[in-house]
Length: 191
Image (tube, rainbow, N blue to C red; front, side, top):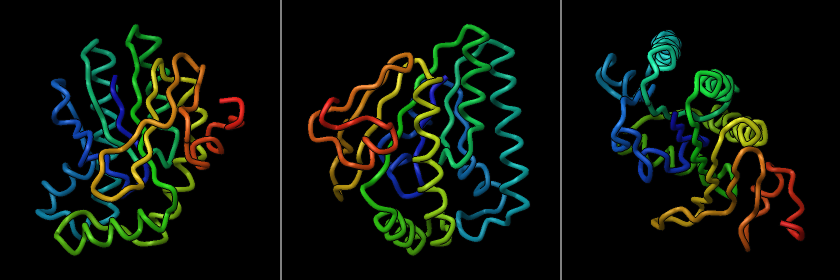
């Protein structure tokens, strides 16, 4: 089980497209756009139905013992609970989490993406997803077998690794940004 996670506008699809993982993959945004015909103005009822479809996709792959990848904002703990289920069925679980130094960066990126025809979200939704994803990161690190936490704040640059975890043991990289230390509840002086 591979999960690529982070708030909207963190660069998940740009830097770690799940379609390139070589396993069955499900992107809620892509599926919604396929149904609606656009990434713009996806009705909440469609997003909710597709979220349930994604949950079925995950359950079927876990029950069938088949590798898979999903993308999520991690605004809820659904992917963490799915990782617990996958591990109990013998899966190895890996999380790649991207975030920026500020929700302001994410708001600006999503606005630019929407203006270019990509998936849009309101400023309120983006800020709420940003806060929730960081709040849920600590629990995710405790559950997933392996985690890579990356900072994608720098425009046009590949995200940089700021922390890694294996089976709940987390270590900050030198120069990790404050958001990573805070979300992971690690004293940056002790790493």
